[in-house]
Length: 181
Image (tube, rainbow, N blue to C red; front, side):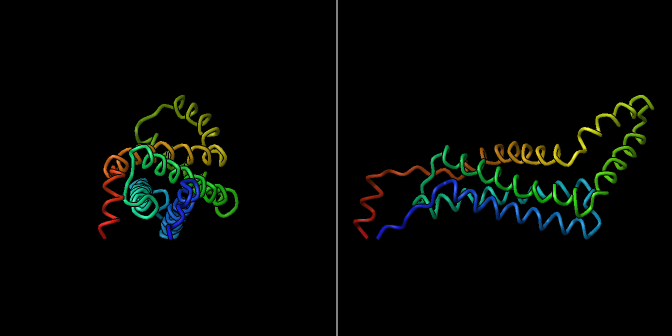
């Protein structure tokens, strides 16, 4: 009996949930460690997306597609996984900023002001920066930016993963190998 193939959307949604949950757990760990505003530690979270896309594309090839993968299929799976994980993790961030620790936005603004002052920005530049921060540091704008950045990075990672993991199959050879067994 032939195994039923999972739809690529359902597959990507499942793996996107896994990657999103891993990102959320990492974010919670950073928060309780007191280093959630550390950019190096936050950027390390990109490894979760890289590993998640790589594993999901490989598993799609091996578990759902009979060991074969066209470049376009791999790219599609990777982008969908990044989209779903971006939605899940950005939704968590929205809840976090609105209800769990609303002061985090002020802490982020303060950190950027301190960096700007250290770099020697003038009062006029700081005033202009303040106006822009009011728009950017809105939880809903950050929610959309999280999804968009996940898609952009996910697309780049998916290009690499699909190129590395693609494996073309010869239908005749595949059928003959099954007969010989």
